Length: 394
Ligand SMILES: *Cc1c(COP(=O)(O)O)cnc(C)c1O
Image (cartoon, rainbow, N blue to C red; front, side, top):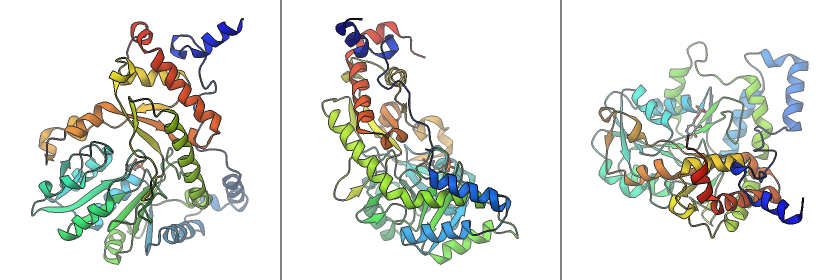
C-alpha cells in the first residue's frame, strides 16, 4: 500500500470501513489492580470472604468517614438504596414534596415515588446542565421536605448556593455524589455539603465493588432514623465483607486517579476546543476539582453536518471510543400525574436530546489514547456527510 492509501484508510471513519482510531476499543472496568488482587487472595486464604462480619466493613466505614470528614458512614447494598434511605432519614413521607432536577438519574425520581412523596422537577442550568439554584424559589411550597442535588457527568451543582437556599427555607438537602466521589467543590468534598450525602459502588462507578453504596452524614438524628429502618436484628441493606475489602485500596488511590482523569480531560478538551458541536459541561477551576465518571458534553448536530447524536455515538463506537447518550429527561418518561413541573424544563428537554457522555476508563490511559479520541471525533466530523448518506440510523 502506498503512503497516501494508508493515510486515507487512517483518516476514513471506521464506520465507513476505515481503520478505527482505537483498535482495541474502550478499556474494561474495573482495571486489574494488584492491591485488589492481594486482598481477594487473602480473603480466599482466610476464608473470610464468606463471613457476615469481619474487619473490612467497619474499616471501610471509618476510612470513608475520615476521607470525607463526616461523623458517620453507613454502608449499603447500592447507591439507589442509599438515596432511598437518605430520603427516609430526613423524614420524607406521604405527600411530601421533593425537589430534583428534570434531568437526573431515574432511580432518584423512583425513590421519591417509593416513599409516596411527590417529585417536583426544576430545570437545569443552560451551560452546565446541572440543577440550577435559581429555579428553586419557584418550586418551594409548604410541603417541600427535601432537595436532591445530583452532580452529573463530571459537572457539579452550585452546591454552596443550594445549601444556603435549603438552610434558609429549612428544607433538607440530599447530595448525590454517586458520579463524583472525591471531587472537591470550594475546598470541600462532594457528598459532604448536604444533610446527607450518597455514594455508589456500582459496577461502572469510579469506586466499584460491582454493587454497593454509602450514606455520609454528620447528623446523628438522621443516622439513627436510617439505622432504625435498616437494622432489623439482621441488616436489611448490607454491604458485604468482600465488597468492603476491594473498596479499601480503591479509596486510597481515589485522589491520584481523579487527578489523572482531570489531566486527560483537560488535554482532550484542549484538542477539541475548535469543535463548537462538542462543548464540555465543566472543566476544572479554582473552585472545582471534578471527578469524571461519564463525562458530559453538549452535542450540537448542526456543527457535525447535521449528524444525529445517535449516529455520532455509533460512529465513535466504531472508532473504539465509548461515547453514549445521557439520561432521558424525567418529565419526558413519566406520566404527568406522577410529578409536578416547577417550570418549563426547557434545558432539561435540551439535555435529554443533546447530552453526550464519554465513559471514564479511557481517562486513565496514556496521552496518546486521549489524542486518538480527538482524532476519532475529527474523522467523524469530517466524514459526517458521507456517514449521513451511507449509514442507516438504528
Ligand atoms: C449510579 C448512580 C446512583 C446509584 O446507582 P446504584 O447502581 O444503585 O449504586 C445514584 N445516582 C446517580 C446520579 C448515579 O449515577
